[in-house]
Length: 300
Ligand SMILES: Nc1ncnc2c1ncn2[C@@H]1O[C@H](COP(=O)(O)OP(=O)(O)O)[C@@H](O)[C@H]1O
Ligand SMILES: [Mg+2]
Image (tube, rainbow, N blue to C red; front, side):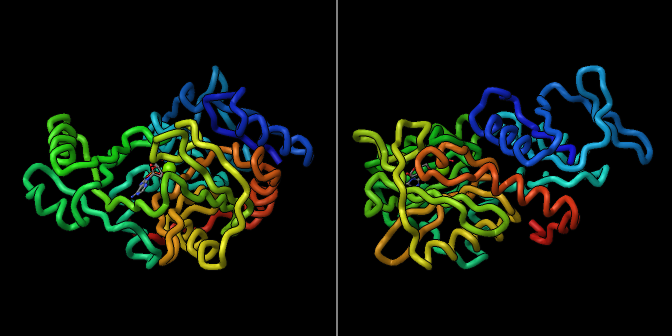
């Protein structure tokens, strides 16, 4: 198979692992920096150009689109979709998962547990918003944040109001969430490939932080998921139309609460769990490139 990995970082651990596993399985693999691609559009002829070359003969793409380039990256993925090239993650699912407002709506509809969440604008009554999530302390999140950036724990009512106002002045969409203190700075990351959990870890925040993201210095350890946690992770990925996903959940006495579903989860989990996530993805790609793309039926 001719496989293209869409990534800006040839030296990025996840990208390197995908290249390694694809080579091991005898595929012809290359890394395409999608930020340097351009596309031409004319009647019935969607083309992707890259470094003076027209990209043809690609059987499958594996998008690893950065949060900073979501829209551009998704447009490049879409161009391949228009050529009927198989993609492990559809362009629409990428855009959908990068928007926390849209994601929380879909997750709530799918019936998985989520923390009580509100989103609002300056026209809304902020005191009422706080009341809905049980008052301070509350979590306030930028709709398009990632790696723990843009997630604030507002410990007092005053702080919460000020943060909401600040986001508003900057015209940033945000959501306000009940602070699940019970999780105590830890969360669970379940890595899904082809609808199944292939690796899972518990992440703990560093020092006094409440955010357990590895990018914020959080540390991971192997964890065994309960049946409910496993099913919840699978359901959440499905609700977002993602065959490959990193599902973040808080562990609580009343069951898991899903925080988000990442469309381009990092492979740091391999080092912690010893699971070969990259091989699972390449296997899934082989299998699916043959059977063809499934239609996205999420409708939102
Ligand atoms: N409602 C919440 N209650 C407690 N901790 C939370 C809550 N929401 C987020 N966190 C913590 O903050 C981290 C980052 O939040 P998340 O929604 O996953 O945003 P990001 O996209 O930036 O990773 C989570 O991994 C978790 O540790
Ligand atoms: Mg997260």
